Length: 144
Image (cartoon, one colour):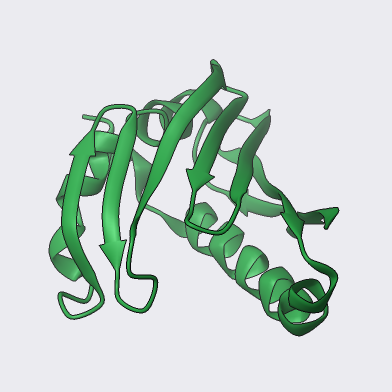
């Protein structure tokens, strides 16, 4: 096993860091979009302010996403406990102007070498896409 780190591209959001942080640091906000999750792929979804538990089709066991650390208006750190290995994700915010906050995601996990070779490119692409989606999210509507 080798610890592997992936970093997304830095994306710009037209929101202030405090508004983004307020939404992302409360996992209960996912309740607003849970109906958009594919019912045939995600079951037994449980959401609290600092934990998400769900069973994902194909994994066979529940995974847990826990909010493990935050730095107000700067960082949200999540631990993803899977049946295979823990994964840590950081959402980093840097406000350069009240209507321009940069978002970067960092993912760290101990992947077996063979798995790393198979999913490395897909992991990077997925992380870049997740950062892009987070940057485009309508945070002001949710922070109210």
